[in-house]
Length: 267
Ligand code: ARG
Image 1 (cartoon, rainbow, N blue to C red):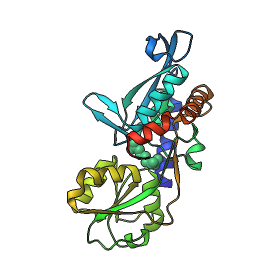
Image 2 (image 1 turned 90 degrees about the vertical axis):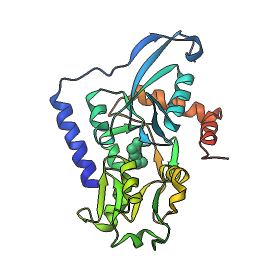
Image 3 (image 1 turned 45 degrees about the vertical axis):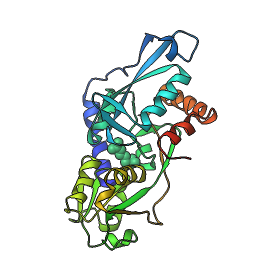
């Protein structure tokens, strides 16, 4: 994953730099009264990029984008007097869009990593996650090590890809990389991969909706705790601060807990 991630970022930087700098897109609008949160009567609008193929965090419902991340941002917006508008951008182009200024932030169940911090700034964490292995009942998989010699599907340039690449080797032909997580899970369903690895919340959502397939999951003891953060362009402290102010408020006032309960992440 390291290689892919770096390649993707290097690519975005080159393209980003070769383009004329684009303004960051936030704009003042008159606040609808129930949305303002602040006392000024105006809210700032921010464009959010999200790979809306990642239920329950972000997915499409007709033309609207919904999910945990959207609820969290909307709750933040209500606290700090900001309005967020959402657009789907596929994962492989999402950080390029951020660098180009097409969007002001990325909200896409993004794990905060040291590697990514070299290129982007993150908000404070708003969700804890970990990797999870998913396979069909009967496959003899009890730990990460059991994936050796098996074909494993992952979403490219994710932390899931990273754990599998670290185990099997980046160049292993047993790793099948997909641009979107549902494609990796489809590969498992179709029997063209023996396992898939991805974020626990997304894997469990898939099991919930496809349980009849006879699926099983396991979290390896080596899988680290991951934190999701919202991503802003390097040094965009305005948006970073706004997000952190909001995250602090919704942690304090119980809104974040409420959203976690809505999605079954907390009781
Ligand atoms: N949390 C993982 C990562 O940051 C996967 C995120 C993928 N998100 C998405 N919306 N496709 O690498």
